[in-house]
Length: 239
Image (cartoon, rainbow, N blue to C red; front, side):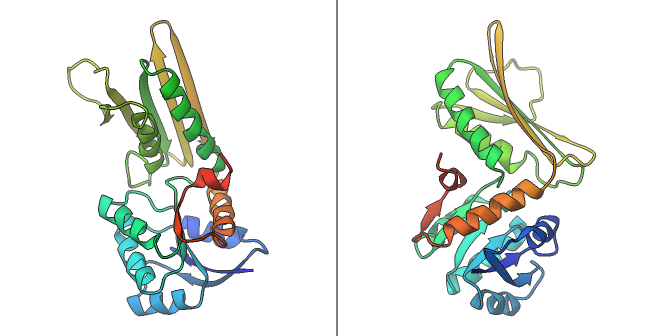
């Protein structure tokens, strides 16, 4: 059984993790991101692994605590800075670390399909539209930006354009990303590739947050026995 700490335990994803945790886990510590550094350090000292669904503002405190007391980390926190990603990479030299902008297994497959389509249809225009509930604070979503990077990795000199405005025509090297916010949508991502006379659309719709929690728990169970390193969700799925 894996002894785990849920960081961000009072949030919607933290509560979902706690509700869905199965016999593989003992969620022996649950802490929110407004806790003191001492409380966080004490909580980490008693676990094998940390599952993090907090926010970018609280993430530095977790990274600092984990560098002092290295523990395996599964994180689904988005809107992280380049410096925070670098600190996560440094931590992965000590312990196994898995970060994903979206813990859904379906989105992991979508990511792979988008990369393949963008490479095979290298001269097609790519536009990404994401839709989330009205209270989501970051836009575009981390998932949309990850999908955009999957396209950009296959196309040198491409440029991600978020929320296109103005009078200029679309440029050949652009990857458009648009964000919609409203209602209670758990998450919808649509990637469209356009050519003269045809269009290919790949999409994923999250009907609830359960699949994010289940994906994180599966990732944590898989990561627990791994050596130090930086891992991806598609590796969990064997993609």
